[in-house]
Length: 490
Image (cartoon, rainbow, N blue to C red; front, side):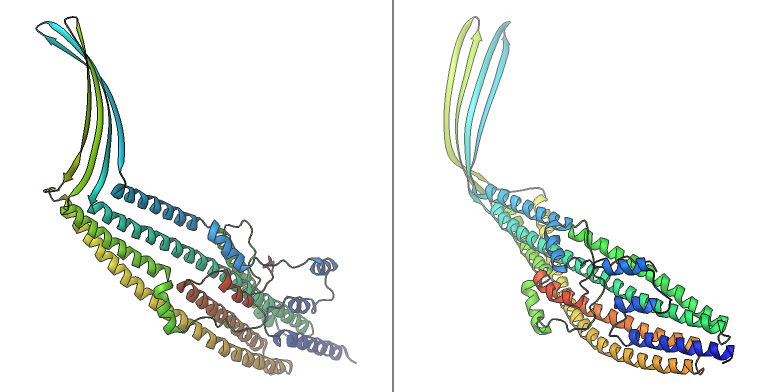
């Protein structure tokens, strides 16, 4: 056998091995199978370093931080949630203050001491005195203060719904960040698998060039793709790290491990969501933002009623007092001690007749705030309805896209197999083969994006219906890889 025939024979043998490696990779359900990727990566070298093989076998995979546990931790430890809880406590204290001012009696004790000096026709007079008074006031009729109590009660209820809405917002942000980190990790695994395939293609190009069958252009084409994929891997790693920091900040945890990607099998989403028509009706009774706006409207109406009451209705109080006064008068060497005891009980009436436009301005302010609260309720109602419809639409469209992308992936895989056979036969170029590989990678990228879009829409629906908690998120965890994301150095 001639040297040229020997070289051609070696190339055919390596191409057959390469085809076997491709069938292992492209025939799998997803690109992101770590053992398959590693075996493919080392199949085109003489041997893997022993230290690398030992570390890969002995290092146990870390588990990702459970999604439901992160949500539970965020409920208590997120800074925004603690701020909302403090606002609720402050509103409750203000409500107790308003109730005490409108209904509870007040008892006051006062004491005073003084010394009076006079000069009369050249004669000095000095009179020290002391007094102590105990007084009590019982509100009998205070329409404005009692209307303010109702307004403050509505404000307290509004603050509770604001705290609930804040918790829902934090849970939604944490869930979306957790999903974004898993998406970046899955896209990185796809890129790493593509990198391994391109490196194998580059190895074949090198051998073809040594045998005189290839060109330098084929090497440059493949190296360009390799550099692009490496840059993409670095970008995806940074994106995953950023989302992991966001999850740690929202959950209040010092160490958070996000998922290494999506699950290998594409399973259906949980079917515990109500139909769209029922969801629109349930949002009226469940959505925190909507209920917050309704409580704000109630508070604005009560405030307006209080402003009208204080503008023209009188206040009636029962008052009682007891006092004792002692004084000593010294004049021309004569000292006279006096003691005076006084008791009084009665009813006090205060009726505002003219305030210079102050009360009218307060009434106008309350009326404007009532109009604003009504407009906010209408706006929130429209936003909730639109967001629900959009979330249901995105979820349905994403599920249809998932099925379509699976068909695209199957077609692209069959096309790649045909192009590869033509490449081996010399009928297609290296660039044609690289493009066929890129079509499979793009289809699987789109499939990952569609799966994450469906999950994000599902999360939005749960948030709008106030169901985004650990119990409803637990079934969604099956869509993610339980292993934790690790650092990658391409």
